[in-house]
Length: 325
Image (tube, rainbow, N blue to C red):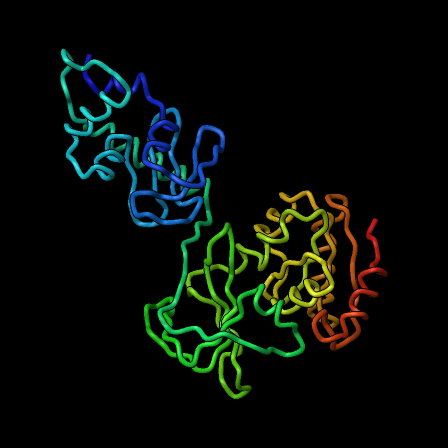
């Protein structure tokens, strides 16, 4: 019997990951997800490996392979050395076994595995930062300084960004609203300071699909009740009256956002703006959540939203929210 077959019979994927200090390890059926130690990233779902076969794939830039290619990358050695390393690691005697490299079947298995993983995980996130100096913001509208610090509001004089086409463009005088998801900063929403600057908002990186995330989801997801509103600063307003909220970035609740909210098992409170668009979004959301979650609605007068009214009035509106049966 060849060495690879002998080693595969003793395969223990978790033992190998722990040896290499893979972080954020989480089992998902036959799959294990974690951050990727190959490129030393901190995205907790970037790396996926099958516990039964040892086939793996990194959603960032490391490609895919099996336990032998994983060891090759981690140890910077060739295939034959990786086989010997793994035989020692798993205490497998390969003295009388031939070391035979994998051929076409191996490559086809990797290709199929990567296709499965990509279908299973539609959305992946990487950390996003900028090189420019970010300055502290001392005051913003009527918000308390503690709120500004909690949500890490910053300011940048000038920032260079990239469009989906790869073209570089520059924004001046922008407030910075970090977007945190799964424990990492996956993006930044840049808001203009001067009313004459365009665009009003710019979400980066350009390829980030805002419908795949919810602003403040990490903080709110452990709450028994989550308020769903349109904008970032609406979330801040609810934070100042002690309530957990998320924002859908000014749009309707997408299927992915819906699944994220349902995953929490929390009661849902809809708190969209008091304009025509807000009413349409609310009506659609009621159809999404009705009979699937404990649901209630906070209504706002025409032209108002959670941030624009006094905090005492916002709390009163919350207390008088309408339950949807």
